[in-house]
Length: 147
Image (cartoon, rainbow, N blue to C red; front, side, top):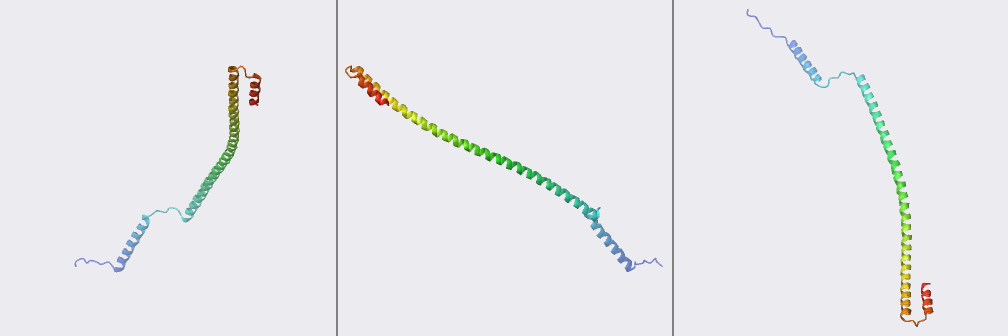
């Protein structure tokens, strides 16, 4: 009798097939990130990371508040400096106006004196050219023009 081949029972074939499927499924699960931490460890790590983030954010906020305070101080100083400079400008403008008026009055007085001087010189020249004219009259006329 030739050795007969034994066919495996159907049940054992199904069990093998089922084992293969489970192995392939478990291999697929292992393809992703391998988790070595328990859920509690993960929660602790997240809690610590969140606390560190809150601390960094708080520190950054304090730094920004400090910068804002410094800038506000600088703004106040610049505003006060601007007001002082504006007051000085007003004073200089007023002084400039006064000096312009003074210069104008000096120029006008100078012109007046020059015209009186020319008039006096012309009378003096006239009396020199014509000795018969009363010198006393010329002197009185010149004095009257100067007043």
